[in-house]
Amino acid sequence: MLDAVVVGAGPNGLTAAVELARRGFSVAVFEARDTVGGGARTEELTLPGFRHDPCAAAHPLGVSSPAFRALPLERYGLEWLHPELPMAHPFTDGSAAVLSRSVAETAASFGPRDAGAYRRLVEPFLPKWDTLVRDFMSLPGTALPRDPVTLARFGLTGLPPSTWLTSRFRDERAKTLFAGLVGHVMAPLGGFATGAIGLVFALAAHARGWPVARGGSQSISDALAAYLKDLGGEIHTDYEVKRLDDLPPARAYVFDTSPTALAKIAGFGDYYANYRYGPGVFKVDYALDGPVPWTAKEARIAGTVQIGADSKEIDTALRAASRENRAPDRPFMITVQPGVVDPTRAPAGKQVFWAYGHVPSGWTGDLTDALERQLERFAPGFRDRVLARATAGPPELAARNANYMGGDIGSGAVSGLQTLLRPKLSLSPYGTPHPAVFICSSSTPPGPGVHGMSGHNAAKAVWRRLRQA
Image 1 (cartoon, one colour):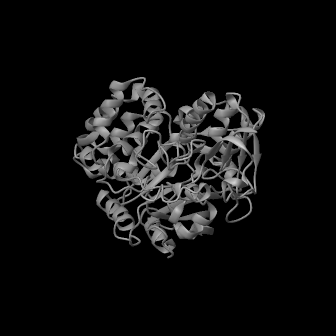
Image 2 (cartoon, rainbow, N blue to C red):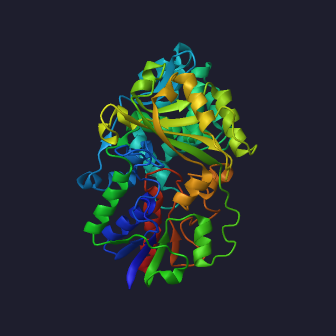
Image 3 (cartoon, one colour):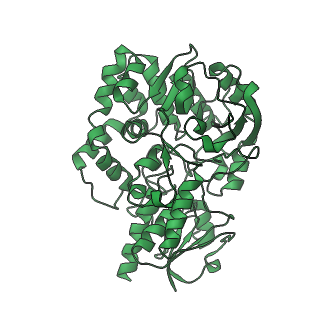
């Protein structure tokens, strides 16, 4: 009998398996698709030689993750590549605000009226980032805070809506960039704890950067899988699990799946019936005949580029997708251009380009024209660079990854109390009604992102049970 079986070979499932194997437990992973990866994959979606990331592409939380930093993933091929600028947010006048590794450079891009306010916001937390991110991403109940005072101060700053936090800024440049940071989790700007979301992304950029993985996000998953195999773990692909009886006998079962899928597989009925999924995304992967022709020079060297003319336009787009059940006319966009730092992703002189906008859950329309009209506002001539495109709306994203219910790449709405308490109100969020069954997906704390911390935290709950048995 195995000690643990893990269902789903995304970053969280693989991290959970690694953490258990490192502690001497026998582990096997079962994955429905023919390769490991989940939300961290790389595929030729458009033309031969163009390697795209179907989901996650830039990894501010991955490079800062306490789980990943504790593992020897570099020995297994993972290499973080840092663009000259982590992120840029261009404006229609050809200028840009930036999120730089340097706090001073970032503050200067906001203008003199907001530079001091931004420094006062981030500088108290930066020296303690490694401890703060460990405390923030380990909650709840998996570890005692190492610095409870800093964590409490962070909570007081970040738990109110982001609009409260940005009220300290006087000009639109800083407000717009920060609104875009919140938009990464598809949350309207006035939601609970949205200030913390924006602040985490800003601090991560200053402390560790917003890198891409050399060769694509698949290298993160491949490194975890290779390390697991060296630890004696097994990985079985092309193995779809529809009920617990499909799995071999084990002392514990760990699911890197949506709560909905877990309830169906394990027969939990309506246990997760109140869990809410968020809006979907419409994603386009481009093969380009050269770099994106951004008007703002800062955007040409940034790994990630946010697209939204101002904070009002961003908020309008987020509300349209999440509350008004319609596709926005001017979508807020997150784009990644790995080629600014990784030439292996496309043939010489060419580029891959990654972009998405928010749409209602399950939306079946085509947002391509709206996305490209937005891009043309900030990069005139963009369409002339397009060699090929691969589009994926909510139905296609859900078909590729069963965790993306309705096209929700965060595997659950980041709004209200569910921002922190997911998949349901519980002191043991990784446990389930069955004492031997656990959940470790992005539907559990600390939530979305390729960081492995949900898997790390769940593994702690599993090995405590295994040692008690």
